[in-house]
Image (cartoon, rainbow, N blue to C red; front, side):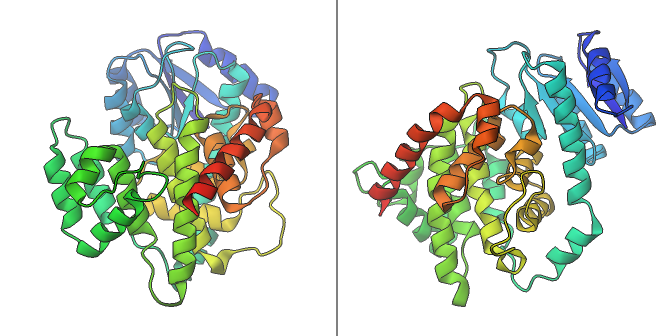
Length: 363
Protein backbone atom coordinates (compact mmCIF):
# COMPACT_ATOMS: atom_id res chain seq x y z
CA UNK A 1 0.00 0.00 0.00
CA UNK A 2 0.96 3.62 -0.59
CA UNK A 3 0.26 6.14 2.17
CA UNK A 4 0.73 9.91 1.80
CA UNK A 5 1.30 12.24 4.73
CA UNK A 6 0.36 15.87 4.12
CA UNK A 7 2.11 17.23 7.18
CA UNK A 8 4.90 19.64 8.10
CA UNK A 9 6.31 17.04 10.53
CA UNK A 10 9.13 15.25 8.66
CA UNK A 11 9.59 12.54 11.30
CA UNK A 12 6.09 11.14 11.65
CA UNK A 13 5.90 9.16 8.36
CA UNK A 14 9.11 7.24 9.08
CA UNK A 15 7.98 6.41 12.61
CA UNK A 16 4.61 5.18 11.36
CA UNK A 17 6.34 3.10 8.68
CA UNK A 18 8.39 1.40 11.41
CA UNK A 19 5.23 0.71 13.43
CA UNK A 20 3.55 -0.80 10.37
CA UNK A 21 6.60 -2.93 9.62
CA UNK A 22 6.52 -4.31 13.15
CA UNK A 23 2.97 -5.50 12.34
CA UNK A 24 4.11 -7.15 9.14
CA UNK A 25 2.96 -4.39 6.76
CA UNK A 26 5.66 -3.20 4.39
CA UNK A 27 3.91 -0.12 3.04
CA UNK A 28 5.35 2.82 1.15
CA UNK A 29 4.94 6.09 3.07
CA UNK A 30 5.59 9.48 1.49
CA UNK A 31 5.43 12.97 3.00
CA UNK A 32 4.53 16.31 1.45
CA UNK A 33 4.23 19.56 3.36
CA UNK A 34 2.20 21.51 0.76
CA UNK A 35 -1.30 20.50 -0.43
CA UNK A 36 -0.59 21.59 -4.03
CA UNK A 37 2.45 19.29 -4.07
CA UNK A 38 0.34 16.44 -2.65
CA UNK A 39 -2.33 16.93 -5.31
CA UNK A 40 0.22 16.82 -8.12
CA UNK A 41 1.73 13.55 -6.87
CA UNK A 42 -1.66 11.97 -6.19
CA UNK A 43 -2.84 12.76 -9.70
CA UNK A 44 0.19 10.91 -11.07
CA UNK A 45 0.13 7.93 -8.70
CA UNK A 46 -2.88 6.97 -6.59
CA UNK A 47 -2.57 6.41 -2.85
CA UNK A 48 -4.42 3.91 -0.70
CA UNK A 49 -4.57 6.31 2.24
CA UNK A 50 -3.66 9.88 3.14
CA UNK A 51 -3.09 11.47 6.55
CA UNK A 52 -3.71 15.22 6.53
CA UNK A 53 -2.56 17.60 9.24
CA UNK A 54 -5.58 19.74 10.27
CA UNK A 55 -3.34 22.79 10.57
CA UNK A 56 -2.03 22.53 7.02
CA UNK A 57 -2.90 25.34 4.62
CA UNK A 58 -5.77 24.27 2.34
CA UNK A 59 -6.30 21.00 4.24
CA UNK A 60 -10.02 21.19 3.43
CA UNK A 61 -9.35 21.78 -0.27
CA UNK A 62 -7.03 18.75 -0.40
CA UNK A 63 -9.56 16.47 1.31
CA UNK A 64 -12.39 17.70 -0.92
CA UNK A 65 -10.21 17.17 -4.00
CA UNK A 66 -9.61 13.55 -2.93
CA UNK A 67 -13.30 13.01 -2.20
CA UNK A 68 -14.14 13.63 -5.86
CA UNK A 69 -11.01 12.44 -7.66
CA UNK A 70 -10.03 9.43 -5.51
CA UNK A 71 -12.99 8.41 -3.30
CA UNK A 72 -11.40 5.01 -2.67
CA UNK A 73 -8.46 6.63 -0.83
CA UNK A 74 -8.82 6.41 2.95
CA UNK A 75 -8.67 9.95 4.42
CA UNK A 76 -7.49 10.54 7.99
CA UNK A 77 -7.18 13.92 9.70
CA UNK A 78 -4.83 14.51 12.60
CA UNK A 79 -5.30 17.44 14.99
CA UNK A 80 -2.69 20.16 15.25
CA UNK A 81 -2.29 19.93 19.06
CA UNK A 82 -3.59 17.65 21.77
CA UNK A 83 -6.31 20.04 22.91
CA UNK A 84 -7.34 21.71 19.65
CA UNK A 85 -10.57 20.57 18.06
CA UNK A 86 -10.77 19.52 14.42
CA UNK A 87 -12.95 21.77 12.27
CA UNK A 88 -16.36 20.23 11.55
CA UNK A 89 -15.82 20.67 7.80
CA UNK A 90 -12.67 18.54 7.97
CA UNK A 91 -14.46 15.94 10.09
CA UNK A 92 -17.16 15.60 7.42
CA UNK A 93 -14.54 14.89 4.75
CA UNK A 94 -12.54 12.34 6.74
CA UNK A 95 -12.82 8.61 7.28
CA UNK A 96 -11.22 8.98 10.68
CA UNK A 97 -9.84 11.49 13.20
CA UNK A 98 -6.65 11.29 15.23
CA UNK A 99 -5.31 13.40 18.05
CA UNK A 100 -1.92 15.06 17.68
CA UNK A 101 -1.00 13.21 20.85
CA UNK A 102 -1.73 9.83 19.25
CA UNK A 103 1.31 7.55 19.36
CA UNK A 104 2.62 6.33 16.02
CA UNK A 105 1.31 2.86 16.86
CA UNK A 106 -2.24 4.25 17.05
CA UNK A 107 -1.84 5.98 13.67
CA UNK A 108 -0.54 2.75 12.14
CA UNK A 109 -3.43 0.79 13.65
CA UNK A 110 -5.94 3.28 12.24
CA UNK A 111 -4.44 3.11 8.77
CA UNK A 112 -4.76 -0.67 8.72
CA UNK A 113 -8.34 -0.51 10.04
CA UNK A 114 -9.57 2.01 7.46
CA UNK A 115 -7.90 0.14 4.61
CA UNK A 116 -9.63 -3.06 5.70
CA UNK A 117 -13.00 -1.31 6.00
CA UNK A 118 -12.74 0.09 2.47
CA UNK A 119 -11.98 -3.39 1.15
CA UNK A 120 -14.89 -4.99 3.03
CA UNK A 121 -17.45 -2.43 1.84
CA UNK A 122 -16.27 -2.84 -1.75
CA UNK A 123 -16.52 -6.63 -1.91
CA UNK A 124 -18.91 -8.08 -4.56
CA UNK A 125 -20.61 -10.42 -2.06
CA UNK A 126 -21.84 -7.47 0.03
CA UNK A 127 -23.15 -5.65 -3.04
CA UNK A 128 -25.01 -8.79 -4.08
CA UNK A 129 -26.58 -9.21 -0.62
CA UNK A 130 -27.79 -5.61 -0.58
CA UNK A 131 -29.08 -5.92 -4.14
CA UNK A 132 -31.13 -8.99 -3.20
CA UNK A 133 -33.02 -7.25 -0.35
CA UNK A 134 -36.74 -6.90 -0.97
CA UNK A 135 -37.17 -3.62 0.96
CA UNK A 136 -34.57 -0.93 1.58
CA UNK A 137 -34.69 2.41 3.39
CA UNK A 138 -34.99 5.23 0.89
CA UNK A 139 -32.27 7.85 0.52
CA UNK A 140 -32.94 10.74 2.95
CA UNK A 141 -33.25 13.34 0.19
CA UNK A 142 -34.61 16.24 2.25
CA UNK A 143 -31.92 15.68 4.88
CA UNK A 144 -29.24 15.78 2.19
CA UNK A 145 -30.79 18.92 0.67
CA UNK A 146 -30.67 20.61 4.09
CA UNK A 147 -27.04 19.51 4.54
CA UNK A 148 -26.22 21.21 1.24
CA UNK A 149 -28.12 24.35 2.26
CA UNK A 150 -26.23 24.52 5.56
CA UNK A 151 -22.93 24.74 3.66
CA UNK A 152 -23.94 28.38 3.09
CA UNK A 153 -23.02 30.27 6.29
CA UNK A 154 -25.71 32.85 5.45
CA UNK A 155 -28.56 30.37 5.11
CA UNK A 156 -31.80 31.67 6.64
CA UNK A 157 -33.99 29.77 9.07
CA UNK A 158 -37.04 30.54 6.94
CA UNK A 159 -35.59 28.73 3.93
CA UNK A 160 -34.91 25.56 5.95
CA UNK A 161 -38.39 25.69 7.47
CA UNK A 162 -39.90 26.07 3.99
CA UNK A 163 -38.09 22.94 2.79
CA UNK A 164 -39.46 20.91 5.70
CA UNK A 165 -43.00 22.27 5.24
CA UNK A 166 -42.86 21.27 1.58
CA UNK A 167 -43.63 17.69 2.71
CA UNK A 168 -46.63 17.92 5.09
CA UNK A 169 -46.45 14.30 6.24
CA UNK A 170 -42.75 14.53 7.03
CA UNK A 171 -43.26 17.92 8.68
CA UNK A 172 -45.88 16.37 10.98
CA UNK A 173 -43.43 13.65 12.01
CA UNK A 174 -40.75 16.28 12.69
CA UNK A 175 -43.16 18.15 14.98
CA UNK A 176 -44.03 14.92 16.78
CA UNK A 177 -40.34 14.22 17.46
CA UNK A 178 -39.66 17.85 18.39
CA UNK A 179 -42.28 17.62 21.14
CA UNK A 180 -40.85 14.40 22.61
CA UNK A 181 -39.15 14.33 26.01
CA UNK A 182 -35.71 14.42 24.38
CA UNK A 183 -36.30 17.70 22.54
CA UNK A 184 -39.47 19.40 23.77
CA UNK A 185 -38.16 20.77 27.08
CA UNK A 186 -41.68 21.57 28.35
CA UNK A 187 -43.08 24.15 25.92
CA UNK A 188 -45.15 22.79 23.05
CA UNK A 189 -43.69 23.31 19.59
CA UNK A 190 -46.59 23.99 17.23
CA UNK A 191 -44.96 24.95 13.93
CA UNK A 192 -41.94 24.08 11.83
CA UNK A 193 -40.51 27.65 11.87
CA UNK A 194 -40.75 27.66 15.67
CA UNK A 195 -39.10 24.22 15.80
CA UNK A 196 -36.18 25.43 13.67
CA UNK A 197 -35.79 28.59 15.78
CA UNK A 198 -36.12 26.77 19.09
CA UNK A 199 -33.98 23.72 18.34
CA UNK A 200 -31.42 25.15 15.91
CA UNK A 201 -30.57 24.22 12.35
CA UNK A 202 -28.41 21.15 13.05
CA UNK A 203 -30.87 19.56 15.48
CA UNK A 204 -33.73 20.21 13.05
CA UNK A 205 -31.69 18.56 10.33
CA UNK A 206 -31.34 15.43 12.46
CA UNK A 207 -35.07 15.42 13.27
CA UNK A 208 -35.72 15.49 9.52
CA UNK A 209 -33.33 12.54 9.14
CA UNK A 210 -35.18 10.57 11.84
CA UNK A 211 -38.54 11.35 10.27
CA UNK A 212 -37.40 10.55 6.74
CA UNK A 213 -35.18 7.53 7.31
CA UNK A 214 -37.69 5.39 9.19
CA UNK A 215 -40.81 6.27 7.17
CA UNK A 216 -41.95 2.71 6.45
CA UNK A 217 -45.54 1.63 5.83
CA UNK A 218 -47.40 -1.66 5.90
CA UNK A 219 -46.11 -4.60 7.98
CA UNK A 220 -42.78 -2.87 8.68
CA UNK A 221 -44.30 0.33 10.10
CA UNK A 222 -44.34 -0.85 13.72
CA UNK A 223 -40.75 -2.10 13.52
CA UNK A 224 -39.64 1.18 11.92
CA UNK A 225 -41.29 3.25 14.65
CA UNK A 226 -39.57 1.20 17.36
CA UNK A 227 -36.21 1.59 15.60
CA UNK A 228 -36.82 5.33 15.20
CA UNK A 229 -37.43 5.74 18.93
CA UNK A 230 -34.35 3.66 19.85
CA UNK A 231 -32.24 5.57 17.32
CA UNK A 232 -33.41 8.92 18.69
CA UNK A 233 -32.35 7.81 22.17
CA UNK A 234 -28.94 6.77 20.80
CA UNK A 235 -28.61 10.10 18.98
CA UNK A 236 -29.46 12.01 22.16
CA UNK A 237 -26.96 9.99 24.19
CA UNK A 238 -23.95 9.79 21.82
CA UNK A 239 -22.91 13.51 21.95
CA UNK A 240 -22.94 13.35 25.74
CA UNK A 241 -20.22 10.69 25.67
CA UNK A 242 -17.85 12.61 23.42
CA UNK A 243 -14.60 14.42 24.12
CA UNK A 244 -15.10 18.20 23.70
CA UNK A 245 -12.84 18.48 20.64
CA UNK A 246 -15.13 16.25 18.53
CA UNK A 247 -18.17 17.81 16.84
CA UNK A 248 -21.15 16.41 18.81
CA UNK A 249 -23.37 16.68 15.72
CA UNK A 250 -21.26 14.00 13.99
CA UNK A 251 -21.83 11.55 16.86
CA UNK A 252 -25.58 12.29 16.98
CA UNK A 253 -26.00 11.86 13.22
CA UNK A 254 -23.99 8.62 13.16
CA UNK A 255 -26.01 7.16 16.04
CA UNK A 256 -29.24 8.06 14.27
CA UNK A 257 -28.07 6.43 11.04
CA UNK A 258 -26.85 3.31 12.83
CA UNK A 259 -30.43 2.13 13.26
CA UNK A 260 -30.58 1.44 9.51
CA UNK A 261 -29.05 -1.96 10.23
CA UNK A 262 -32.12 -2.82 12.33
CA UNK A 263 -34.28 -2.28 9.23
CA UNK A 264 -32.48 -5.00 7.28
CA UNK A 265 -34.00 -8.10 8.97
CA UNK A 266 -33.18 -10.32 5.97
CA UNK A 267 -29.50 -9.96 6.87
CA UNK A 268 -29.96 -10.43 10.61
CA UNK A 269 -27.81 -13.26 11.93
CA UNK A 270 -30.35 -14.05 14.66
CA UNK A 271 -28.79 -15.49 17.79
CA UNK A 272 -25.34 -15.89 16.24
CA UNK A 273 -22.96 -14.02 18.58
CA UNK A 274 -21.10 -11.01 17.17
CA UNK A 275 -17.36 -11.56 16.99
CA UNK A 276 -15.31 -8.55 18.20
CA UNK A 277 -13.32 -8.38 14.95
CA UNK A 278 -16.06 -9.26 12.39
CA UNK A 279 -18.82 -6.68 11.80
CA UNK A 280 -22.30 -8.17 11.30
CA UNK A 281 -23.30 -8.07 7.64
CA UNK A 282 -26.31 -5.83 8.35
CA UNK A 283 -24.01 -3.17 9.83
CA UNK A 284 -21.75 -3.29 6.77
CA UNK A 285 -24.80 -3.23 4.48
CA UNK A 286 -26.08 -0.11 6.27
CA UNK A 287 -22.68 1.55 5.79
CA UNK A 288 -22.69 0.48 2.14
CA UNK A 289 -26.10 2.15 1.63
CA UNK A 290 -24.74 5.33 3.17
CA UNK A 291 -21.93 5.25 0.62
CA UNK A 292 -24.52 5.02 -2.16
CA UNK A 293 -26.25 8.05 -0.63
CA UNK A 294 -22.87 9.87 -0.62
CA UNK A 295 -22.96 10.54 3.12
CA UNK A 296 -19.63 11.39 4.79
CA UNK A 297 -17.19 8.53 5.25
CA UNK A 298 -16.79 9.14 8.99
CA UNK A 299 -20.49 8.33 9.40
CA UNK A 300 -20.09 5.15 7.33
CA UNK A 301 -17.26 3.99 9.56
CA UNK A 302 -19.21 4.57 12.78
CA UNK A 303 -22.21 2.66 11.42
CA UNK A 304 -20.12 -0.25 10.10
CA UNK A 305 -18.31 -0.65 13.45
CA UNK A 306 -21.19 0.13 15.80
CA UNK A 307 -20.97 -3.40 17.30
CA UNK A 308 -17.25 -3.97 16.68
CA UNK A 309 -15.56 -0.76 17.93
CA UNK A 310 -12.16 -2.36 18.49
CA UNK A 311 -11.68 -2.33 14.71
CA UNK A 312 -11.17 1.45 15.04
CA UNK A 313 -8.15 0.98 17.32
CA UNK A 314 -7.68 2.12 20.90
CA UNK A 315 -9.18 5.60 20.66
CA UNK A 316 -12.78 6.13 21.85
CA UNK A 317 -13.87 8.89 19.43
CA UNK A 318 -17.05 8.87 17.35
CA UNK A 319 -17.01 5.08 16.91
CA UNK A 320 -16.86 4.55 20.66
CA UNK A 321 -19.70 6.99 21.34
CA UNK A 322 -21.91 5.36 18.71
CA UNK A 323 -21.04 1.87 19.98
CA UNK A 324 -22.02 2.66 23.57
CA UNK A 325 -25.06 4.78 22.66
CA UNK A 326 -26.55 2.19 20.28
CA UNK A 327 -25.75 -0.68 22.66
CA UNK A 328 -27.59 1.04 25.52
CA UNK A 329 -30.48 2.15 23.30
CA UNK A 330 -31.04 -1.22 21.61
CA UNK A 331 -30.12 -3.45 24.58
CA UNK A 332 -26.96 -4.87 22.98
CA UNK A 333 -23.78 -5.97 24.76
CA UNK A 334 -21.13 -3.29 25.36
CA UNK A 335 -17.54 -4.26 24.57
CA UNK A 336 -16.26 -3.61 28.07
CA UNK A 337 -12.80 -5.03 27.37
CA UNK A 338 -12.34 -2.46 24.62
CA UNK A 339 -13.62 0.33 26.90
CA UNK A 340 -11.01 -0.73 29.44
CA UNK A 341 -8.36 -0.46 26.74
CA UNK A 342 -9.59 3.07 25.91
CA UNK A 343 -9.61 4.06 29.58
CA UNK A 344 -13.38 4.76 29.45
CA UNK A 345 -14.85 1.75 31.29
CA UNK A 346 -15.31 3.67 34.55
CA UNK A 347 -17.87 5.92 32.81
CA UNK A 348 -20.16 3.05 31.77
CA UNK A 349 -22.36 2.90 34.94
CA UNK A 350 -23.06 6.63 34.65
CA UNK A 351 -23.84 6.30 30.96
CA UNK A 352 -26.27 3.46 31.69
CA UNK A 353 -28.02 5.58 34.30
CA UNK A 354 -28.24 8.53 31.89
CA UNK A 355 -29.75 6.35 29.15
CA UNK A 356 -32.23 4.74 31.56
CA UNK A 357 -33.33 8.12 32.92
CA UNK A 358 -34.03 9.52 29.45
CA UNK A 359 -35.70 6.29 28.37
CA UNK A 360 -38.11 6.50 31.32
CA UNK A 361 -38.84 10.16 30.56
CA UNK A 362 -39.59 9.40 26.91
CA UNK A 363 -41.88 6.45 27.73
